[in-house]
Length: 392
Ligand code: FDA
Image 1 (cartoon, protein in one colour):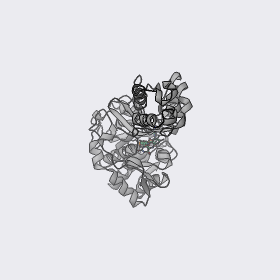
Image 2 (cartoon, protein in one colour):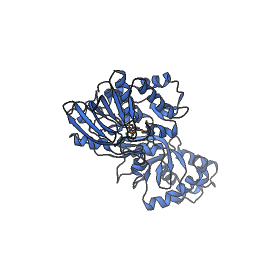
Image 3 (spheres, protein in one colour):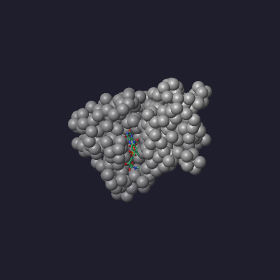
Image 4 (cartoon, helix red, strand yellow):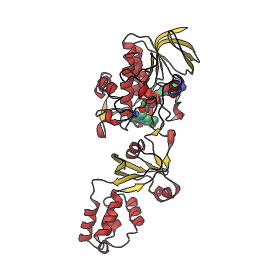
């Protein structure tokens, strides 16, 4: 039977980082994937430019049953480490908003960089290979595939989560974990557009295509970014972010254009020109169709002079604390990531190894560590892949 020191399942971001790290230590490494190409999610990420890290990435940007779990790996492989790698490969990049780093060119450059690193250190990459079964023996693990069986001392599972099944996501890692007796926390689509019930959709879908700067709140969490009305409900970065915290039956609260003091503006307009309609006053501040919707919804048809402070305050409050109850989400079909996953309680935070199964590692999205939108999920993939690569 073929023998390798390390077999890694899944040639995504985490798997490739782990493979190159282990190979640099002199380990013989085989990387297996059922897809025809490595790093397909890297390719489509960041609108084709890959938001490959976030300079501000820290434990606070991740959701997990154990918020401390990610600390060790994130500290050992930082955004600066990945930036140094990108620089060594002469890949130009830029910072967009909020510390997010994107390639100037194509995200394929990141895949090429990882492939170059892996191949120069002798990693064997076996694509279009189906995984059939995994078993444990005295020598470690036997991985049975459509291209034969492999014996390995260390087995690293990096097959990602359930998001975008069309691209080959299978949730296979959770199955392996369960087979080896590891706990898996509830999984759900995250960083995903939210949908509306038919009643709200009828009212809001005419606004489809309008983007507004908002701060969106759920409980004690809030995100200040753009929001987009869609023909299914709500999307845009602010909504994707809050979707990771929102649960069915909960409201979200939206503060439209937080930098604008709507009450002060409306009072000033009333003083300057009392005959002006509220909608006209708002049109300079907000997209016209949205302003029209808000005014019609509040039935504020009188000119400003006829509206007292109480009426204007009530209307301004609608714009600063607009409550909405999403019906659901678009699900794994469009979710960027899977929330939840392999319980961190069963993994060693330094190496990502299963505490009860020496030699078995889980890295990347399949672990119950989920980043915010903005390059954090790749940083977790790099950091957890590196942590396992140093030990496997
Ligand atoms: P990943 O999913 O990348 O890799 C898993 C690999 O395992 C795949 O190659 C798959 O084919 C393989 N596999 C799965 N099941 C298998 C099986 N049964 N047998 C064999 N192989 C199997 N993040 C970020 O930080 N910045 C960004 O810009 C974006 N943008 C973005 C856009 C879109 C559209 C999506 C869907 C996601 C993002 N993300 C992102 C999230 C990011 O892509 C994600 O967090 C990482 O790809 C996770 O890396 P992993 O290596 O864990 O899994």
